[in-house]
Image (cartoon, rainbow, N blue to C red; front, side, top):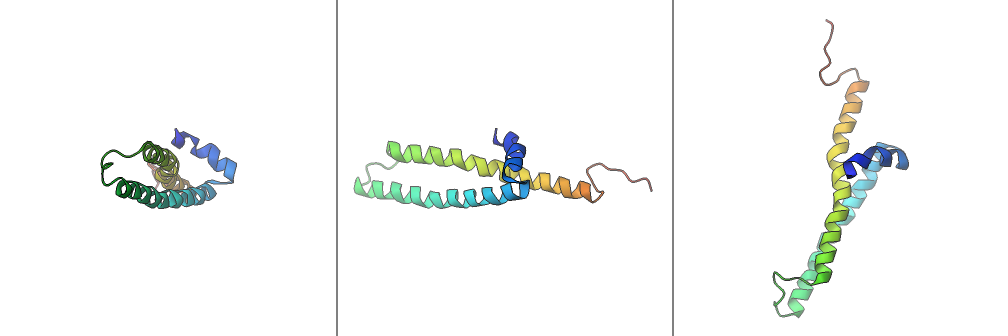
Length: 103
């Protein structure tokens, strides 16, 4: 669904390049959150005497699910924007996919 919203979001924030920059910051924050979630889960495991290995608390499960849901937003844009930008730049320079020259 996020890939379908790339164009409207790009217009909303003032261009696809700006959107690209914003989602890279979101991606960096999300990846830093992996450390936080891992440390909390490790602390939980240590305080329970290892009884929660393979059975994290509901808080850890919810945090991980929320993390992956939010991570999907920058990942969808990260996977689609470079191809869109390459297409824009190649068509602006007169090149393009499948374009035949008349020479």
